[in-house]
Image 1 (cartoon, helix red, strand yellow):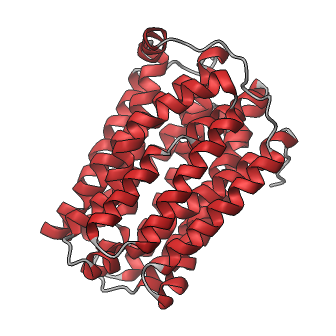
Image 2 (cartoon, one colour; image 1 turned 30 degrees about the vertical axis):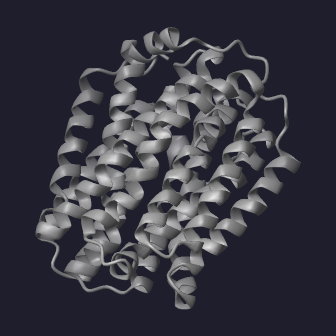
Length: 387
C-alpha cells in the first residue's frame, strides 16, 4: 500500500517538537523498577512518579491552552518547554525520593505542549488533511516509544539518573528547534473563550462522548505502559534491556499501522468505526494478560495491543478536532489534556498497586475500561456523515 502524504509543511516542526517532549516520558517507563529499588519504594510509589506530574498538568494544561488562543501556540510551547527543562535537570540531580517528586511536580506545572501542539496541527490543516495529520502525530508517539525505552536501557548503564541528563539536553535542543522553525502567528489573536463557554462546549453530546472515550482509552493505555516494566520484572523476570526492546517493537508496529493503514481505513469506513475496531483489539489484548505465563504469549499480547492503540488514538483526536470551533480550539484541547491528566493520575498508581498484589490481574481494569469505551462508541457518538 502506497502512503501519500497530504499535510502542510508547517506541521513538520511540531512533530519534531512533540517527539523530543515525549522522549522524556518514555525514558522513565523502563526505569521504574530501578528507581523503586534505588529509593526503597513500593511499586505503588513508583507508579505515582508518573501520576504526580499528571495531577499538576490537569490544572496547568487548560490554562496554557486558553492563553495559547490569545498569544499564539509558539509562545506557550516555548514557555512550557523551559519549565519542563528545569524539571528534568532537577530530576537528574535528585538524591532523594522527595526531590524526585519535586522535580516531577515542576515538570507537570510546565505541561502545556500537547494541547498547544494539537491545536497547532488543527490550526494549519484543512478538514480533508486532518485525519492524516493526526495519524502522523500518532506516529511521532510511536517513534518516541521506539527510541526512548531502548535509549534508557543503554543509558542507565552509567547510572539510573544519567538518562535524565540526556532528557534535559534533548529538551534544550527542542527549545532551539521550536524557536527557529515554528511560526509565531499560528493561533495568535484568537478571542479567548471564557470558562463558562468552554464548559458548555465540552458538555455538548458529540464532544462529551469523545472526551469520555478518550479518558477510558488513555487510562487503559497509561495503566498498561506505566506497569509494563514492573509487570515484566515481577512476573517474567525481564531485564531493563528486554523491556526497552519490547516497547520499541510495540512502537514500530504502532507507527506502521498509524502511518500506513489508519488514514486510508478512515477514508473508507470513518474514524468512528476505525476506533471501534481498535477498541476490540485492545480488549482482546488486555484480556489475554490473564493467561500469560511466558514471554512468547506476552509478545503476542503486546502486538495486539499496539495495533489497537494505533487505531484508536488518531481516530479520536481527528474526530475531536472536527467538532471543536476554531476560537475554542486551544481551550478545549486543554480540556482534552486535563482528561488525559486525570487518567495519568489514577492509572499508574492503580497499575503499581495491582501488580504488587497479584500481577496476573493486571489486564482486568483496562479491559473493563475498553469495553465501556466500545459501548459508548456504539451508543453515544454520531454516525459517519454527521461531521
